[in-house]
Length: 242
Image (cartoon, rainbow, N blue to C red; front, side, top):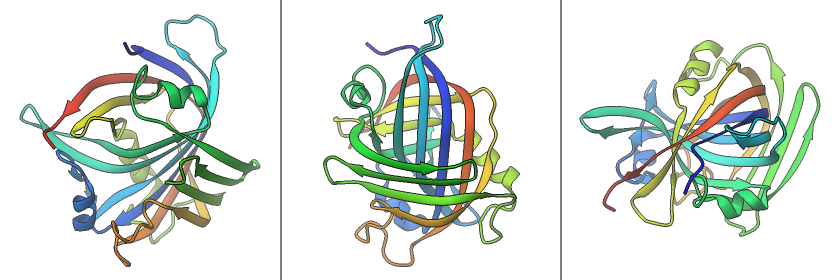
Protein backbone atom coordinates (compact mmCIF):
# COMPACT_ATOMS: atom_id res chain seq x y z
CA UNK A 1 0.00 0.00 0.00
CA UNK A 2 1.30 3.45 -0.93
CA UNK A 3 0.17 6.94 -0.04
CA UNK A 4 -1.80 8.48 -2.92
CA UNK A 5 -0.25 11.92 -2.44
CA UNK A 6 1.85 13.83 0.09
CA UNK A 7 2.46 17.54 0.48
CA UNK A 8 4.94 19.80 2.21
CA UNK A 9 7.42 22.61 1.75
CA UNK A 10 10.86 22.65 0.13
CA UNK A 11 12.93 24.80 2.49
CA UNK A 12 15.97 24.55 0.21
CA UNK A 13 16.77 22.65 -2.96
CA UNK A 14 20.14 22.71 -4.73
CA UNK A 15 20.38 21.25 -8.23
CA UNK A 16 24.06 20.87 -9.10
CA UNK A 17 24.39 19.72 -12.71
CA UNK A 18 26.99 18.07 -14.94
CA UNK A 19 27.30 17.84 -18.72
CA UNK A 20 28.25 14.31 -19.69
CA UNK A 21 29.39 12.41 -22.77
CA UNK A 22 26.12 10.85 -23.95
CA UNK A 23 27.68 7.52 -24.94
CA UNK A 24 29.16 7.07 -21.45
CA UNK A 25 25.87 8.07 -19.90
CA UNK A 26 23.96 5.65 -22.11
CA UNK A 27 26.22 2.80 -20.98
CA UNK A 28 25.44 3.63 -17.33
CA UNK A 29 21.65 3.69 -17.78
CA UNK A 30 19.41 0.64 -17.42
CA UNK A 31 16.76 -0.13 -20.04
CA UNK A 32 14.43 1.44 -21.05
CA UNK A 33 16.12 4.79 -20.34
CA UNK A 34 18.35 6.74 -22.72
CA UNK A 35 20.02 10.13 -22.16
CA UNK A 36 18.07 13.30 -22.86
CA UNK A 37 20.64 15.62 -24.43
CA UNK A 38 21.15 19.38 -24.53
CA UNK A 39 23.57 20.76 -27.16
CA UNK A 40 25.00 17.27 -27.60
CA UNK A 41 25.51 16.54 -23.88
CA UNK A 42 23.69 14.29 -21.44
CA UNK A 43 22.65 16.08 -18.24
CA UNK A 44 23.05 14.55 -14.80
CA UNK A 45 23.34 15.98 -11.35
CA UNK A 46 22.76 16.02 -7.62
CA UNK A 47 19.60 17.20 -5.89
CA UNK A 48 20.13 18.30 -2.28
CA UNK A 49 16.74 19.02 -0.80
CA UNK A 50 15.53 19.90 2.69
CA UNK A 51 11.86 19.05 3.13
CA UNK A 52 9.59 20.41 5.87
CA UNK A 53 6.03 19.69 7.04
CA UNK A 54 5.73 16.61 4.83
CA UNK A 55 2.40 14.87 5.43
CA UNK A 56 -0.35 13.03 3.54
CA UNK A 57 -2.32 15.47 1.38
CA UNK A 58 -5.61 14.37 2.96
CA UNK A 59 -4.46 15.53 6.43
CA UNK A 60 -5.97 18.95 7.27
CA UNK A 61 -3.22 20.15 9.62
CA UNK A 62 0.01 21.93 8.61
CA UNK A 63 2.64 20.12 10.64
CA UNK A 64 4.60 17.12 9.38
CA UNK A 65 8.07 15.60 9.22
CA UNK A 66 11.27 17.21 7.94
CA UNK A 67 14.47 15.74 6.50
CA UNK A 68 17.61 16.38 4.48
CA UNK A 69 17.77 14.34 1.29
CA UNK A 70 20.10 13.73 -1.65
CA UNK A 71 19.38 12.19 -5.03
CA UNK A 72 21.63 11.49 -7.99
CA UNK A 73 19.56 12.14 -11.13
CA UNK A 74 19.96 11.86 -14.88
CA UNK A 75 17.70 13.50 -17.46
CA UNK A 76 16.27 10.70 -19.59
CA UNK A 77 13.68 9.75 -22.14
CA UNK A 78 12.01 6.41 -22.82
CA UNK A 79 9.25 4.91 -24.94
CA UNK A 80 5.92 3.87 -23.45
CA UNK A 81 2.76 2.85 -25.31
CA UNK A 82 4.09 4.29 -28.56
CA UNK A 83 5.00 7.66 -27.01
CA UNK A 84 8.34 9.17 -25.99
CA UNK A 85 8.31 10.24 -22.34
CA UNK A 86 10.76 12.53 -20.51
CA UNK A 87 11.81 12.68 -16.89
CA UNK A 88 14.68 11.68 -14.64
CA UNK A 89 16.24 8.37 -13.65
CA UNK A 90 17.41 8.27 -10.04
CA UNK A 91 20.02 5.57 -9.35
CA UNK A 92 20.49 6.56 -5.70
CA UNK A 93 18.53 8.31 -2.93
CA UNK A 94 19.90 9.16 0.53
CA UNK A 95 18.13 10.69 3.53
CA UNK A 96 18.75 11.89 7.07
CA UNK A 97 15.39 10.43 8.13
CA UNK A 98 15.27 6.95 9.60
CA UNK A 99 11.55 6.89 8.81
CA UNK A 100 12.21 7.67 5.14
CA UNK A 101 14.89 4.99 4.93
CA UNK A 102 12.50 2.40 6.39
CA UNK A 103 9.45 3.46 4.36
CA UNK A 104 11.20 4.11 1.02
CA UNK A 105 10.35 1.39 -1.47
CA UNK A 106 7.52 0.20 0.77
CA UNK A 107 5.07 2.97 1.70
CA UNK A 108 6.34 5.57 -0.76
CA UNK A 109 8.41 5.13 -3.94
CA UNK A 110 12.17 4.75 -4.07
CA UNK A 111 14.73 3.00 -1.87
CA UNK A 112 16.25 5.55 0.53
CA UNK A 113 19.64 4.92 2.14
CA UNK A 114 20.32 6.50 5.52
CA UNK A 115 23.07 9.13 5.57
CA UNK A 116 24.59 11.92 7.65
CA UNK A 117 24.23 15.49 6.38
CA UNK A 118 26.32 18.49 7.41
CA UNK A 119 24.77 21.82 6.43
CA UNK A 120 26.17 25.34 6.74
CA UNK A 121 24.15 28.09 5.13
CA UNK A 122 23.32 31.78 5.26
CA UNK A 123 20.96 33.90 3.18
CA UNK A 124 23.36 33.81 0.20
CA UNK A 125 25.90 31.05 0.89
CA UNK A 126 25.23 27.31 1.00
CA UNK A 127 27.29 24.26 1.87
CA UNK A 128 25.90 20.72 2.08
CA UNK A 129 27.89 17.53 2.68
CA UNK A 130 26.40 14.04 2.68
CA UNK A 131 28.05 10.75 3.68
CA UNK A 132 25.98 7.58 3.54
CA UNK A 133 26.01 5.07 6.38
CA UNK A 134 26.89 2.24 4.00
CA UNK A 135 29.91 4.16 2.66
CA UNK A 136 28.76 3.81 -0.95
CA UNK A 137 27.86 7.46 -1.58
CA UNK A 138 29.18 10.88 -0.64
CA UNK A 139 28.46 14.38 -1.91
CA UNK A 140 29.66 17.90 -1.21
CA UNK A 141 28.37 21.11 -2.79
CA UNK A 142 29.12 24.68 -1.73
CA UNK A 143 28.38 27.97 -3.46
CA UNK A 144 26.81 31.41 -3.39
CA UNK A 145 23.82 33.03 -5.07
CA UNK A 146 24.62 35.08 -8.20
CA UNK A 147 22.47 37.04 -10.62
CA UNK A 148 23.02 35.01 -13.78
CA UNK A 149 23.96 31.60 -15.12
CA UNK A 150 27.59 30.82 -15.92
CA UNK A 151 28.47 31.62 -19.55
CA UNK A 152 30.12 28.18 -19.86
CA UNK A 153 26.82 26.33 -19.30
CA UNK A 154 25.21 24.39 -22.14
CA UNK A 155 22.02 26.28 -21.26
CA UNK A 156 21.82 29.76 -22.75
CA UNK A 157 19.89 31.40 -19.91
CA UNK A 158 18.54 30.92 -16.42
CA UNK A 159 15.07 30.79 -17.97
CA UNK A 160 15.97 27.90 -20.30
CA UNK A 161 17.58 25.79 -17.57
CA UNK A 162 14.61 26.50 -15.29
CA UNK A 163 12.18 25.26 -17.96
CA UNK A 164 14.31 22.16 -18.57
CA UNK A 165 14.19 21.06 -14.94
CA UNK A 166 10.57 22.05 -14.39
CA UNK A 167 9.58 19.66 -17.20
CA UNK A 168 11.60 16.86 -15.56
CA UNK A 169 9.08 16.41 -12.76
CA UNK A 170 8.58 12.64 -13.12
CA UNK A 171 11.35 10.48 -11.68
CA UNK A 172 11.94 6.73 -11.65
CA UNK A 173 14.08 5.09 -8.98
CA UNK A 174 15.71 1.69 -8.72
CA UNK A 175 13.91 -0.96 -6.68
CA UNK A 176 15.07 -4.26 -5.21
CA UNK A 177 13.75 -5.96 -8.36
CA UNK A 178 15.99 -5.59 -11.39
CA UNK A 179 14.12 -4.02 -14.29
CA UNK A 180 11.40 -2.49 -12.10
CA UNK A 181 11.39 1.24 -11.24
CA UNK A 182 9.27 3.20 -8.75
CA UNK A 183 7.64 6.34 -10.17
CA UNK A 184 7.23 9.62 -8.28
CA UNK A 185 6.13 13.01 -9.62
CA UNK A 186 6.99 16.35 -7.97
CA UNK A 187 4.49 19.16 -8.51
CA UNK A 188 5.70 22.58 -7.30
CA UNK A 189 3.08 25.22 -6.58
CA UNK A 190 5.41 28.22 -6.96
CA UNK A 191 8.34 27.16 -9.16
CA UNK A 192 11.25 29.61 -8.97
CA UNK A 193 15.00 29.11 -9.37
CA UNK A 194 18.10 31.21 -8.68
CA UNK A 195 21.61 30.73 -10.02
CA UNK A 196 24.26 29.36 -7.67
CA UNK A 197 27.97 29.90 -8.36
CA UNK A 198 29.77 26.78 -7.13
CA UNK A 199 32.99 27.00 -5.08
CA UNK A 200 33.46 23.25 -4.74
CA UNK A 201 31.58 20.12 -5.77
CA UNK A 202 32.17 16.42 -5.26
CA UNK A 203 30.08 13.35 -6.09
CA UNK A 204 31.11 9.72 -5.67
CA UNK A 205 28.71 8.76 -8.46
CA UNK A 206 29.83 11.19 -11.16
CA UNK A 207 33.51 10.89 -10.19
CA UNK A 208 33.52 7.10 -10.54
CA UNK A 209 35.98 6.58 -13.41
CA UNK A 210 34.76 3.03 -14.03
CA UNK A 211 31.49 4.64 -15.05
CA UNK A 212 32.72 7.98 -16.42
CA UNK A 213 36.31 8.02 -17.76
CA UNK A 214 38.40 11.15 -17.30
CA UNK A 215 37.12 13.94 -19.53
CA UNK A 216 33.64 12.46 -20.00
CA UNK A 217 31.94 14.53 -17.29
CA UNK A 218 32.24 18.22 -16.37
CA UNK A 219 30.40 20.50 -13.97
CA UNK A 220 27.91 22.70 -15.83
CA UNK A 221 25.76 24.86 -13.53
CA UNK A 222 23.83 24.91 -10.27
CA UNK A 223 20.42 26.20 -9.24
CA UNK A 224 18.81 27.07 -5.93
CA UNK A 225 15.15 26.84 -4.96
CA UNK A 226 13.74 28.16 -1.67
CA UNK A 227 10.39 28.08 0.11
CA UNK A 228 8.51 26.06 -2.49
CA UNK A 229 5.15 24.51 -1.66
CA UNK A 230 4.91 21.14 -3.34
CA UNK A 231 3.10 17.83 -3.63
CA UNK A 232 4.37 14.35 -4.48
CA UNK A 233 2.32 11.83 -6.46
CA UNK A 234 3.12 8.17 -6.94
CA UNK A 235 3.04 6.75 -10.48
CA UNK A 236 2.66 3.13 -11.58
CA UNK A 237 5.87 1.14 -11.65
CA UNK A 238 7.82 1.11 -14.88
CA UNK A 239 8.86 -2.43 -15.76
CA UNK A 240 11.41 -3.59 -18.27
CA UNK A 241 13.00 -7.02 -18.67
CA UNK A 242 16.61 -6.83 -17.42
